[in-house]
Length: 206
Ligand code: GTP
Ligand code: MG
Image (cartoon, rainbow, N blue to C red):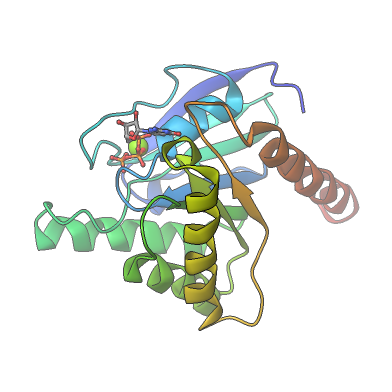
């Protein structure tokens, strides 16, 4: 898919404020600092569209970006940032869960997982929550540039095995690096495939 336009649309503090729309949307979600905003910028080829930071907890709202005037990418706050107060962490968690459960135009949630560290219980738990809510998702391994290929493969195996303790099969997976611009085409192809199905469905039923 060619990215012709990618523009910041707006930010919302919660699902209730998000505007009604029948455009398909895709969300990037994952632990704080996993690289959500960086991945978003890399995928749509805009260096500073979503704000990134070395400090966790940068993204605090539901941020909408409109791509090719046809679909949305949504950058969400991270989960599990230990340094946030318990109250704030709980509020983010509720913001994210409300969004995921109620946003009917959400086509796929991309769960970002750092493939340089051992499997994290909070990621497994989050993926299981998506299962419980029956929300379609894909897994995106981030920062693949940080480990040597053999180490990466081994770590991804460990992450997959920890998920397979709860699931019979794994969803679609992508290995990415925002720094080395790896994984962009595959993610865009996948989105395009779903968009095509969605717009066909909308033509018949909308
Ligand atoms: P929050 O909004 O705070 O939850 O973080 P985020 O998940 O949006 O992460 P962000 O994109 O802000 O990146 C966090 C840090 O990881 C920054 O210092 C980035 O430069 C770094 N980073 C992101 N992607 C990559 C990558 O592909 N490779 C490497 N080596 N570093 C990365
Ligand atoms: Mg961010």
